[in-house]
Image 1 (tube, rainbow, N blue to C red):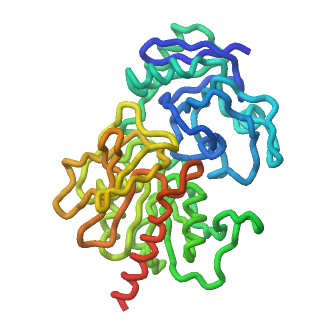
Image 2: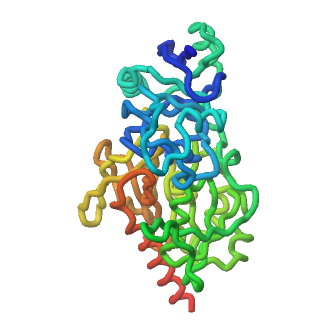
Image 3: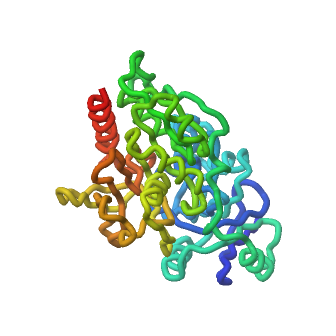
Length: 376
């Protein structure tokens, strides 16, 4: 079945339908990861976005029930050069096409993804629409132009949990599978769910933490009543500026409990500390972003997925930039100089991606331990 991808600036790409038959719109972005498409599909941070994979063959290892990062795919649409119809992997349970259909995700294959990515790099990420129903390019371009942009929208409420839950699954072990939580965890962590990935929770569990996940709008006082040793601020989709309820709660938690933020959590912490954010031209999405630690000059290769960044010039004197992106010098990490609060823009939990930044979870545990000792 034929399908069309139309961008708001009038650029048209023809291809064939994969996944659900239908029509979908969102901001068209690209991810440079060579593998890990299943984790990308199920990352809630992609809500409101049509994701283009730069690697030409996607789906060759199929889909399995163990590698998902949330309960379902959250992205608006999926664009690939070629969708593998005959996966070869002993863990595969279904094809990529069947998985997209099962979850009602509209996709397109046969697109010249190199041309699409070059266009986005030159002209910026923009709203687009995939359709296997309406094949009139002019009609689709107009629909894309009328669709809402990401800026100013609260996409967190569409991916956050609606009630508290505990998480007990740790990191993967070749012999045991996913490990279970320790019988006597050392730390009690409350994790705000702005669109949290499961491998973040697994890292916390494997670090000796008991983890309770709470909705994005949970009042700070309610969190403090849970007597946490630390509070985690998760990744999530879209623009951080309109998530005012989260910013207010973070301000109320500052200094009372250690805070660690990742991705959207990093941006929300920065705003709570008085900083501003801005939209990047085409964002950072992939598993090969070089980041440098300013303290020692060490470079780590990181997994990233974000379209907004913290404005370094808006950070106050009590905030230090701890990490920078070597591609464009954008802020990749901050810490408060007096309070136990720090964050990074990238994803130390990977899934997919390199594991260079796992030390950040150890740092969070060390900060919680020191804070706990000092309080006592």
